[in-house]
Length: 490
Image 1: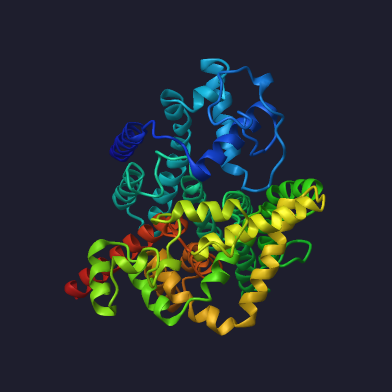
Image 2 (image 1 turned 135 degrees about the horizontal axis):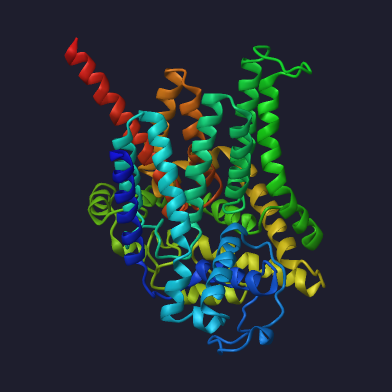
């Protein structure tokens, strides 16, 4: 009874905190695309980035029938938009028909962001379940879930309720998927493998990078099947371990299959989403950095003013190096004094006019898109992304050793906290031969490595693994405290 009361109180605190943190801050950038996709799916049944306002920057309060016909897209992953579309249907049942104009205004923006309560609940409950499984202590599990849940209300957090970026959905699904993978390996039950496959497929349809993480998990489960081979057979003589791997694969296929088939039908490619080409090109461009820029990454990408000033004194850098004409001007991306000029270079499809590695890749994508469009290619965006990816891989493979050596600064940029915690947890899991623990940390660790190797690795990218790192840190701390207590008792 006491446990139930504590759990309900904690949940009440979290929900009140989440609702109180939601503001009417304008929805822009990538979040704007998520809003469009959700609205188009709810009202026209199409996953589409088409602007419901047409070319207008301000949307009239018009009826649904007057909105432009939505054009299918695979530019972004669909799961956040699907959940948002479901939320719009619920709102319409209570509020009546919703115009896109209403959803862009203060009260409407807050209503849209309330959909993140679902992801916040999934995340907090998954953290609770993981800590309960790892520590077998109810109070630790509740406090851990409360800590992670309250961080979703922080204004400066990347994974938070007050946003329409896809990070809350990705963090929630990663926490759920990792928990199911842990339970699958620990119990050996086929239903957990199946549910893990479904959950990881949903995660892949939220962040496409997890497609490659899933391939790694298939290999891991296959290794387990070989290692445990012959320890149990079904009535038909099939190794149970093989059936577990098959259950995971089935979970992946039944969710990923329809979306990938849809993309092949519309765009001639079964890829999960676009944008891999331009992201990989950004990473390939960074391979061109000089030795001065290499050292400068640790200054430019420091995560606090104090750390930056210290590194600047040691390595001889200052703020002037980040400005136009400075030694580190090519390392900046979205926030710098010459951003407007960079945007113009992107709009003109002129990579030679762009200064930063970031804008050069975006301008090159625009240039290739225009070339394919002028040739009459109906899927010019998808074709351009594939061509950009081919060029980027070519540049990387021309000097793979340099590419690997340059991975260090990107780990510093995006996972200075998460990376070390996950590596420590994984090493201890291997040392103790706890494959269930290794399986829990492996997806997040795989994501960190992939982002460092194949992207510009912004801190926001890795933030979805923050809850996993926190769970691992709490579990390690509890183990250390228990060990010290036993030593003192002895």
